[in-house]
Length: 207
Image (tube, rainbow, N blue to C red; front, side):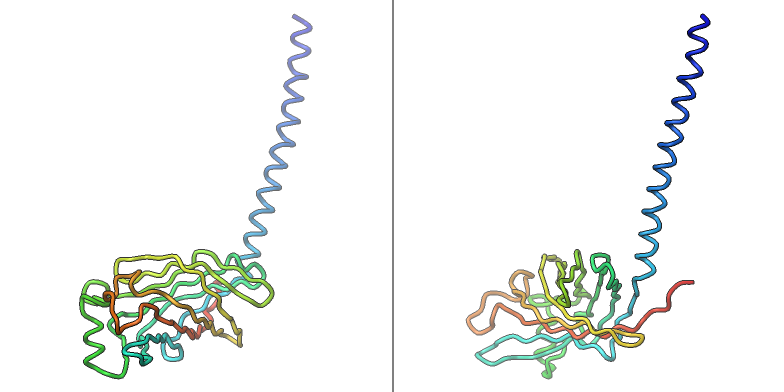
C-alpha cells in the first residue's frame, strides 16, 4: 500500500509536468500561427474596382474582320499582398447587358438568348482560385463564369502599384463555345481575346 501510495503521486506529478510542457508548446505554436497570420493580414491591401477608369474589352473575328467591344459596367475587389502573394485574391464582374460594340443592333443581338442571354444571366464573373508570383511576373488560376457555365482558366497579369491605387492588366483567350455563347459558325471565330485594364482604388484599412 505504501509503495502504491508513494508511486501514485510521483507518476501523477510527472504527468502534470509533461502535460504542462505540452500545453505550453501547443500554446506557443498557436500564438506563432496567429501572429504570422495577423502580420500577413496587416500587409494585405484591399482595392475596389473603379468603373470609370477601368476597361473590360474583347475582340473577335467575324467575316474576316476584327470586331472590338467592351463592357461598360463593371465592379469588383482586389486584395494584394506583395509579401505573401499566395494570400492575394480578386473577384470582378461585368453587367452582361452593358456590352457595347459601336453598333446598337449588333449589341441587341448579342444580348439575346443564343449569345449572352442577359435576361437570365445578368453578370459575367472572374474569380481567382490561386495567385502566385515569380519575380515580377504574376499569374493566377481563375474561375470564369458566363451564363450558367464556369470554367478554369490560367492567366498571367501585371500589377502596377501607385499611391492609393493599383492597375491590374491582363490579356487572355477563351473559347465562346465553352460557355454556350453562340453556335458553330463559318463566319464567327470561336476564340475571343479578352483584355483587362482594371484600376483599383485603395480601401481604408480597418483600425
